[in-house]
Length: 319
Image 1 (cartoon, rainbow, N blue to C red):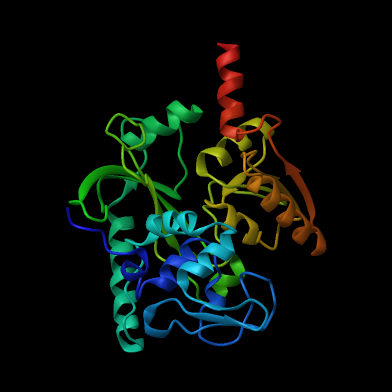
Image 2: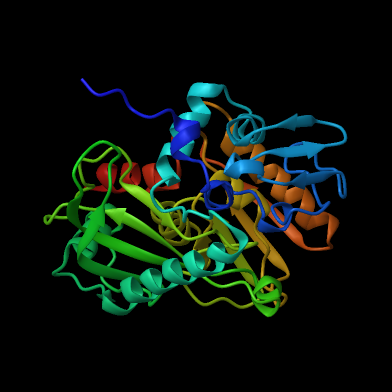
């Protein structure tokens, strides 16, 4: 039986894409002093990525490689870090040299543009529409979500497979967009009859996650909600009658930036067993309040649930 290549070897040259996908700001990954994603220091961290190994140094946290950075950023152990890296390693571009990086980035952007172009608006007849209708009762779908019938799924050590997928456009904050950051994509792999595909990571990012990113699911005025997952965001919008966007991960939720026109933010945290949902929701709430915004945090009462679970429970009781 062939031994699988160690995670640090397979991630070599891919660290910038992996790290931004898990929520570390690209501003921390530019090989010059900047904010530390671990301790929060403003100008003490530098990501030099020597040999493509994700190396870094912080005047307070010390120094290390890419796996160690993921461990400390997510407050997890080696196994937890390796599992998170595995989710994003295939989509992260290889950046072998500074010259080659621009070429590889261009190739990735071309692949992303091609995927978004061939993806179609979601309808009730396709797998994505069936999935969202079953989970949430939706009959209309936003332009930030599309459907593709045959998206490639890569599993290390296995042959590629092809699946229907819901494709979400992940837009940067308005400020980051003005600074030149571009949208990324997120894929939810499905079966033809609208269930999640039986793969190890049915949700995958594509491209580095932009600063303050979110899937802009619906228009807004001065009140806007933010949740972690796409389904959770729709459910919270139905339950609280406010527009809600999806940040996709706890780390991206914590770093999210609302548009300048928003004065009140409702933060819909998950009540997960690890309490991560609580922590990031209240951290975001404190940061937004410090900026002068009104921030309201809502978390489901029952442990181990999110707002989609709450919606499904309410509907099952009413049936």
